[in-house]
Image 1 (cartoon, rainbow, N blue to C red):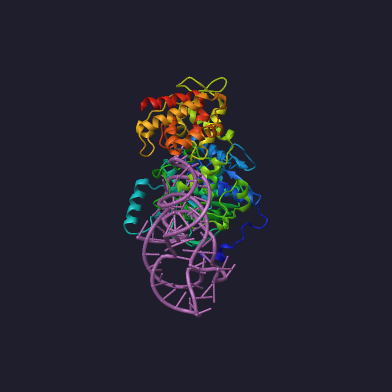
Image 2: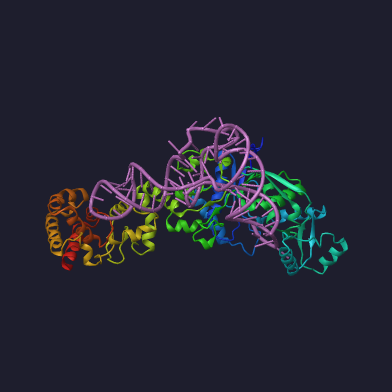
Amino acid sequence: MNASARQQPMILPNQAVRVRIAPSPTGFMHIGTARTALFNYLFAKKHGGKFILRIEDTDVSRSEKKYEKDIIDGLQWLGINWDEGVLINGDYGPYRQSERLEIYESYIKSLLEKNHAYYCFCAQEELEAIKQDQMSRGERPHYPGRCSNLTKEEIQKNLKIEKDFIIRIRMPLKKVSFNDLIRGKVEFDTELIGDVAIAKSLNQPLYNLAVVIDDELMKVSHVIRGEEHISNTTIQLILCEYMEFDPPTYAHIPLILAQDRSKLSKRHGAVSVTEYRKEGYLPEAVVNFMVLLGWNPGTEQEFFTLDELIKTFDLLKVQKAGAIFNPDKLKWFNSHYIKNKGVKELLNLCIPYFIQEKILEKTTGGFKNPKTKELVKESELEKIILLFKERMRVLSEITKLSEIFFIDLPNYDKNLLRWKELDFKTIKSNLLSIRKALEKEDSSYFNRDYLSSKLSEITKKQGVGETLWPLRVALSGLEASPGPYEIMDVIGKEKTIRRIDHAIDML
RNA sequence: GCUCCUAUCGUCUAGUCUGGCCUAGGACGUCAGGUUCUCAACCUGAAAACCCGGGUUCGAAUCCCGGUGGGAGCACCA
């Protein structure tokens, strides 16, 4: 590939940009599909074009409504909104292939009439055997063309006895090339492909046929899709030729790879957008992360809003090699966006996790702790959120992190109260003096800054680590937690004293 | 196996078209230090790459040739 090949005109003259994402609802939306959708969306918006969502559900046995819903929900959640397509409609619908069957039928008939396609009555098992044989001889497996020259009578006879058939394209022998926006000139020899199947019956098109017809009818100008479709392009180009369609401009984007460099799939863990959403990733983070897999603006900017991306995105700067999915970087983006959220918004995002883990229960006025039966004020929850804003990488972590605020007394080994080599006697007396000082304070003054200044003298006298470590452990029961003043601020005077007493009792 | 695509730190990448500003820049991660009662956050620093071999040139990550590695596709799935 040379650079000059990439300097193709991006937009054909006098042609409106119309792109699409065409997922098949056979599984939860893959992160790769989401990224392809994003690239299409950005390209459309950048060029003032339209972005279409088309559902490719021609395979009835594998398609399910719940997956279609997942795809729709996922795109909406990410903020990748389509201008035309399912749910929205438009001038070129319907946008579900299963609702376009009669459209395909006329094209299939016409291909048959023009002898560009033919009926094939070969049995599947037979074909499978041929394929195995070809593979063993080191050939690329392809249909040998046995039914390509059946007479009209033979065909009629077979149809009459209702012999199973499929429809194959009559592949011309030639070299087919196209100019890929990302890869430059790509060339294939049709001989290696053979007469592939394009329909299961007159109104059951297969993928290659259906895409071509829909892209034509929906006036799709640019097909931006995953690299795995490069070899399909040849078949689609021939179909365009046969049906006298003007083919779209192609751009094949690199794949998202797993750690082992193979195509990212379910066996590698979470691959669906829904999974990330459930775990508590923010859509901003997912979008920001995805766009940088295989593309970058050439500047050192790392954080982008969708609007900034629309301005900056450039298809020609998309990488050609696959990009490994790096979960650490996704988390890093996520924690960045969490840190930049307002408390109220963040709280609302976290509440479902509290409820799911049965830490909070909805009541008429607000929330209640189902274990202690206490009411939990929103202001208290906000304080908690504030404490963990910089500590959580994904929202679901909030429940585990904030556990100590929803229990009666922490449970821990008394050795944890030990600061360095300090003996239990000193620890006990240090805690006692703190307790004494706190006892005098009015509970309404129990906030972090006030307490910190009030206790600073004792702390200095007894030693900072010598005082604060046991105090913090007494309050949290944890080796790592927010600071003692912060905890006291949240739990208030009464609970603070109780937890300190609990520690003293243990010693 | 065959066809196509592809190649800069462990990972995402800048730089390649238009050779010198590259003793190769940034980010994630890792490590060390600072801050600090702990953790996180934050700050500072470090280690870390031009796939290999030839050629062209005063000069190559960048241009040319030849290897090698990696990936995808090869369905009556999409």
